[in-house]
Each structure stands twice: as structure tokens, then as C-alpha cells.
Image (cartoon, rainbow, N blue to C red; front, side, top):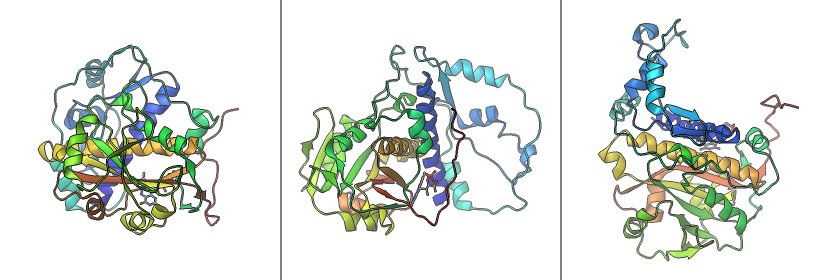
Length: 356
Ligand SMILES: Cc1cc2nc3c(=O)[nH]c(=O)nc-3n(C[C@H](O)[C@H](O)[C@H](O)COP(=O)(O)O)c2cc1C
């Protein structure tokens, strides 16, 4: 079951990676949010069961439009053009055997998406304008050198300015990649367990990415929280509790040391009601989390530190810490950022041919 969730996270990472790469070339990317899964399956040839012999069915995730920066995404034209395409050849079989995972089939069926109404596109005049990185590295260098940290040193501090800059990049600004991909409002917020940020008291913070959620969060979480506005005026960051949360972070991250040894760890919490009412949104919530993760991967790298996705976490423990008592909010993905320690048992080779 966890594999299904990781695939959704990965899809969010991919959506963000494509959006950043397209923006680096001057293009914009848009997720076709209205399109039905069956339509995407048709476009990708995944509905040709005769090809798969019933054994290795594949499921579509997302359809992305990539185009010039100043035009409105032509999702409908893209779809009709692709529908006229003709399939050739046959899918090869990846594995001789097949293991049945009934829970994965269940969640797949439960989150199947039908066609929905297209949201109006934001102003097409807006151009992608990536925030300037803290270090003087090109986007290409950052994207190529990005890796997950396998360990953190437990001593590195980042500055408050670097921390605020990373969080600013997580805000769903529609003119900035990767957020220009989405038209739906931000549904995921970041609960931050801060350990080592110079000039910032260790403790629990929350980045409220959509102002409309503020009242509901205040109502659902512990009444004791301070809700003290912190950082730059335009950063919706609130200080909830001064406390050394290193042990809690480690335990919430499935007892992984990186939770405690990082500069900060975070939980991405989403209004779960959205998925309860429209189950296919469950996938989209995970994608939004993956996009936050990919942004952190790149921003951490740009700040001279490193990040790691935490797909293994205890959601109930995180809910207890925050004071979530019902199913209103759900922790869907965790992340850590800190000073990396190389693991010399791992051998590394250059992943990409670097152009001269
Ligand atoms: C969705 C997701 C969940 C992950 N969960 C964990 C985790 O719980 N613990 C960990 O140490 N690394 C975790 N990682 C990091 C992966 O191990 C790492 O991305 C993978 O080994 C590929 O390495 P790279 O990121 O350096 O390319 C996760 C990464 C992703 C994208």
C-alpha cells in the first residue's frame, strides 16, 4: 500500500521537476487537472489490454501541457490532437510473474478520476520568474547535483534568511515554477519542526500556504498554540511552540536519525475533507506534497545544504503533536533539510553528461 503512496509522491516530484526544467528554457507547464483518467489512458495507449495480457496493467498519472510563456494553455487542442494519433507496436512484458496486491487495486479504483470542469486559467501575461538562489549556481548545476542526503551532521545551522527564502519558494505563487502548473488553490501546509536555524527559536512552526485555511487550522489544532506571526511580513509563517523537538522528529520519521540531525523537519498536512468528498483529489494532494518536496530539494541544494524526502513516517504521532483529533487534517508526506554527511560506503558516478 505504501508503494501506491510513494508513486503519487514521485509523480508530484516529477511534475515539479518538469515545470522547473521547462521554466529554465522559458516555457510554462500546466497540469491538465480536468481531464479524466480514462482519457489519459487512451492517449498513452494504456487501455490496450490486449497488449498487456491482463497481467501488467499500467495506470496513468498526469497529463502536462508545456508551451510558450505568454499564451493560455491549449489543453483542449492538445487533447484532440493526441486523440487522432495512431498507436503502433506492442508493449513488452516487464516481468515473467505477477504479484497481486489487492489493496493497491482498491485504492486505485477508489481514486479513479472522471472528467471534471476546467478551472479558468490565470493571467497568461504572467511569466515564470524563479526566485534567485542563495548561492551563485545555475539552475542546471543545481538540478544536476541534487541528491538526497543519507545522513545529516547534527551540527550545521542555516541562517534565518535562508530558511525564510526556502519557505517563500513553497508559496503557491502562480507566476513561479513549479506552482504555475496548478490552477487549484493550495491545499497543503507545512508544519515545521525547527532544530538549527540561526536566530530562530527551536520549536514548532507552521507555514499556512493558503490564507483561507488559517481559521480552520486555528480551530482544529491545539488551543495552546501561540500563533505568533514570524519572519518577513509577506511570509505566512507562525510560531506555535518553543521546544526541542529533535526526539519527536526522529520518532515521527519512523525513528530515522535524519529527523533529529537536520536543521529542520516538516510534515505536509492537507485538509483531508477534500479527499473524503472527491476521492481522486487524494492523488492530487500527494502530488502537491511531492511538488513541495522537489522545491525543497532544489532550494536546499541552492543554499548549500541538502534535503531528503521522508516517505516513512507515523502520521498518528504527527497528528497527536499538532493536536489533530479527527479526520479534518491529514499528514501526507514529510521532509528534512540539513548539513549532509557523505556515506563513503556508497560509490557515486556522474549521473549526467555535463555539456561543455
Ligand atoms: C517519496 C519519497 C520518499 C522517500 N522516503 C525516504 C525515507 O523515508 N528515508 C530516507 O532516508 N530517504 C527517503 N527518500 C529518499 C530516497 O531514498 C532517494 O530519493 C532515492 O534513494 C534516490 O536518491 P536521490 O534522491 O539522491 O536521487 C525518499 C524519497 C522520495 C522521493
